[in-house]
Image (cartoon, rainbow, N blue to C red; front, side):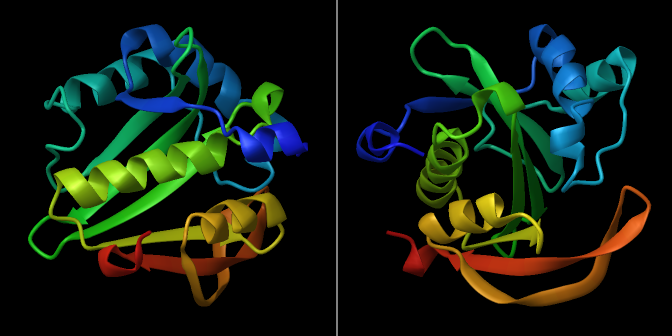
Length: 182
């Protein structure tokens, strides 16, 4: 990443997945570079539509206990650059998990860090979420940097956690508490 990106991180907004995003989601989820570190299931257009219809709230900070797919867009121009998953595991206990992916054509520009920070601000200021967890492959140093730049603390390693490309892969386990978010 060049100094320009470090000094001027991109401005992003996070929106719920909409029908217009489905072709890009299918394209991104088929990129071998993205699939290298994530166990991404192939979903059809209709499966994405069903997922969209199940997301009732027009504002993702008014969420129920379930998983959501969010789109990361550039503020200028509204171009989608990636997606996030957000699982509200318990509103009652203030628990959530997040994941993120950036389309390979947008790598190295700071979008993942900007998106994670944007989501953290929204979750910690507009919801009762008190703790957010995230995992990433031990073979994905870029994702490690994103989580650590956003204030997540590495808690440990989940041995042989997920099956990716036919083999079990260790993952780092991260957490961030609202009281530690800056």
